[in-house]
Image 1 (cartoon, rainbow, N blue to C red):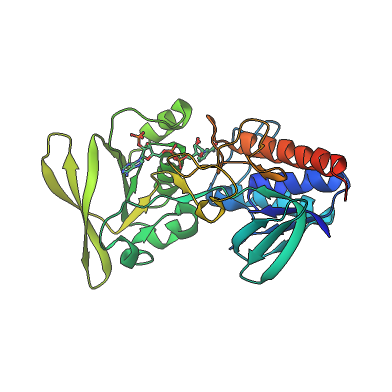
Image 2: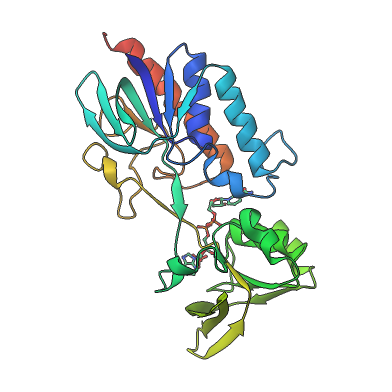
Length: 304
Ligand code: NAP
């Protein structure tokens, strides 16, 4: 019987694996796509204590390698449901059924969509949610980034290195992004800020996305021709499958405090997928450690 199943191999999940293994517990990780989670797509990390600069990909790969070297196994299977059998939990995935004595939900969050009618159809035809993955396709072309958080501002800076022009479109004139990164972006000559403005429609031709219809806060509309759009308007959680085991808040985040405990004994929540004030790489890693050590204590206290 496995000790701990971890759902999600992002920063929180991999950190939990490292702490769980080092506490002498057996650990199996599941992720629907790959290791690394959201941070894989971040071009530059400059706020993780102890590391002055690293790419998201290198950070995630290092974390994965560290967990793997300790004996962690990652299976690329999506977790469909979890059943609480008391002292064990049955986890059903796209690959089969597994049982463990404790489960850590490190499900993170996925990219929020604009909700425009032809948005999904334009993915890969001019629209992307990942500047580091797809930015190179737009070398010397005109692109827009939508959003006002760290992701949008970092993406706009990254793209400005090789595209002809970047429009940063944000619905307010205040930013959530770090001031230092904003200052750096404002100095770029090929970057133009379009504030107090939302994207109301996506125009396309046979080649894909061709222009954005913009609406400012006075309601005035205009068309902005672009070759590409990078949507960076935040994330939303994906926890509906676990709603009978854990409490979800109105936005779908798992209700859990800094101790990472949920309402079900033996089920823990770590990282961006739980209710919390600060969603950062450092807090995701911290959650992984807290949840794994809480799971280890739970396992040591529970008779087999
Ligand atoms: P975020 O901080 O949640 O920002 C999302 C942005 O999109 C906000 O500016 C928001 O506007 C805007 N927005 C939300 N819904 C929208 C909609 N429907 N239409 C138009 N605009 C919309 O998301 P994020 O930038 O992806 O960052 C997520 C978390 O990861 C944050 O905690 C961030 O600090 C962290 N992060 C850290 C790093 C790093 O440390 N290097 C890098 C990337 C991300 P309002 O401001 O008006 O709400």
